[in-house]
Image (tube, rainbow, N blue to C red; front, side, top):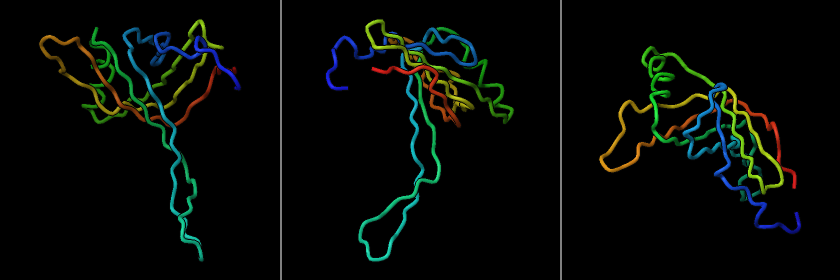
Length: 144
C-alpha cells in the first residue's frame, strides 16, 4: 500500500469477540499471536546460527470488564475436576472508516486460569485471561 489515509487506520473500539457463539459484550482488549517454533541449526564453516522452523505456537490474551460470573461458571468446575475446557474464539473488527472488516477464528483455545476473586476498593472490576490455541482461520480480511 503506497499511501494511506489516517481515517483508514483500524480503531479498536469497533472490535467484538465471541466465545463458542456467546458474544462477550464486556470485552476491552483481545490479542492473539502466532509464533514460529524454531531449532538452531549449526552449519560447518559458518559462524552464524541458522534456524529451522519445526512448528508454531498460538498464544493470546483478553481483558473484560467484570459484569458477571460467566467465566467462573464456564471454566472453574472443569479446572477443579482436572478437565480441559476448549473453546472457539472469534474476533471481529469493523471500523466504518476502515477499508473492510477483519474476522479471525481461533480453534481449540485453552484458557490458562480463572480468577475466583479479583477486586479492589475504588477500582472498576476487570478480568484478564491468557490462552493458547491450536489452529486459526482468517474468515474476512481487510485488503486495502
